[in-house]
Length: 392
Ligand code: UDP
Image (cartoon, rainbow, N blue to C red):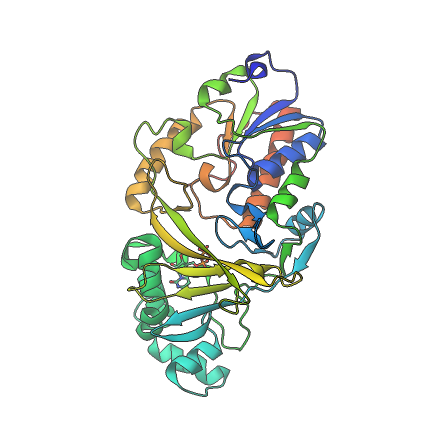
């Protein structure tokens, strides 16, 4: 344990566990409000799973933990984000390979016309897809029902069934409908992956950006410093962005996560012509291939690096990525939420701390709200809750 942790806490100090986006944003807001903040990070780098670094051989900026594209409709989030880096406009385009053919994704008018070998206009396509969709499903209870009620079985089987089974390791009939609701369905040729007003990437990568957020005289970052709940006894408020169950030593078992393994390759020129190619067929063991240099079209590289992504069930030694949140996870989650609610002086934040599938902009928005609530609670002597954004 570092010497200073056991010291008597000074006024207006806080400990933040995790130097990912949630932790960095809270640290910054508190530091600007006059607090001294220590950020404990168990990895040897900041940035959490947004971490980017330049490949030593090719100079290409790599998204080490999979592709991250910043997108938001929130003016507050955009203003905060762009204080710390120059963001370059980037409209993410995904292609999907299904049964040996390549299509644009999400499902657009181009996907529909190409897949069904038609030449429909928007209204015709809307009526055509409505005819394919299962109109008997009014309130979809699963990913599968959501897909069948939205696009019908053929598009579902071609683009979603196999990919989702590989990604989540469960049948889409067991998974929540909310996962599919992340993706738009468009009856135009607009093929951006997202609908948000602001879609951009920080020019020098996410880690530089998060380093700038953390760059404040009253923020100390300690890398390779795991933080345990025993260290939380010293009276300073803790913002915990590590796994919720990890705070309690996994005493009742582990919440389910999917993890990812990447196989990285280096080559010449352009490997696939787009940043992300999804592979939707069940018989391909990987879900997608990311070609990193396409995330920085303002840079020029002769060589290229691409990563083939294999999802798997997260074990104790693996990196948690996606919270699974099935029914059985929710009862275990309920247990840890109750424990957290009884724990004083700790607020659980972010994707791992609240066991939710959060995009980067939501992490920032929630971190800003959490920090504001903490400052308000301090000035009014109100208690700070375990969750500003409850997991359930
Ligand atoms: N999905 C799919 N086929 C695809 C792309 C996505 O079935 O080609 C499903 C899959 O279940 C995935 C979900 O849609 O988990 C959300 O996709 P998104 O691209 O938002 O996932 P992320 O980039 O966060 O992994």
